Image (tube, rainbow, N blue to C red; front, side):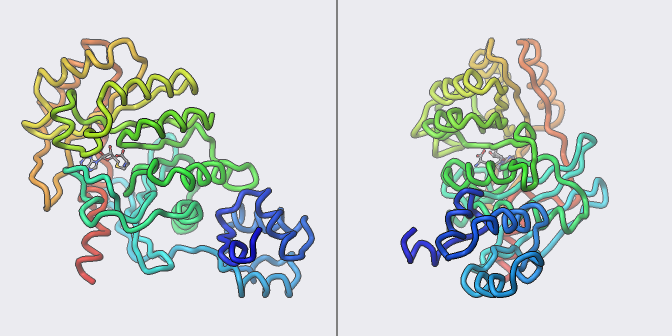
Length: 350
Ligand code: SAH
């Protein structure tokens, strides 16, 4: 490792073998690496001073030069209805991000952000309004889960990368995050309990299949033809629906994991009977899952959610065509506001 690279090390984002390499480079005994990894990812301490089995001199050296990435809780809204919690975390550079904790009967789930803001510009989404400020480091993705588990005192078993940001625009750190959170010497979360949601960056969908991670892939489709999709999602100008579905089929073939298609229903935009028929035709014979979500209104956007009866009609039409479909259950409706709105109101207040 070159001197300047060592100085910029983010110790919490390193794989065990990289950590070992780093420890050797700074002139310490290699076995210290495993101890440090455990402190960082299993016991999840915030300071080197708490790593009690390390020599004092080493603790001091590390804390002077290699600060441990840590997120500060800036705000937390708790739903009185179902215990859902929306967290606002402050990063070390003063930026803020949102994460959500949800309780389900099959376990607790955390929805994390992968970027500060987002560059994709989907028309209905609040996270993209201020553009993308920067990518999150793997450690900052891990920290959202570590801090929430600490704050709630409850075991987190499921992770969805569906908060602010396009995870495939931060590919390297995303994969690093997944390998670290599933490490048996760390949180040891089952890879099968992780879902990554993308707006459909086709080449990255192929790369991700080759990582052989067996993560559930969710693809934001939101339209039944390219013309409508282009109106909702700028990424549709780059990749056609046919290309997106082809890449999803490849993901299924390589990993054996069923892909989920997300479809946010906006009144008069993408929710007609014809839309349902076209969608059914697109997905015919592909073992996948469709998740319908009435669009969450955002102040700055003028999309209206499809009414419940219409949503059920849309669902029925897909079901008649033997497509596996659910309407997403609304969590924390009393602290709602679409993703990104807590962060936005915090920034506006400042
Ligand atoms: N960039 C990724 C993941 C973040 S968005 C992606 O596009 O998939 C997570 C999901 O929420 C996506 O399906 C996104 O399209 C959807 N979404 C964003 N804003 C929404 C809104 N106002 N109402 C309903 N769904 C929304």
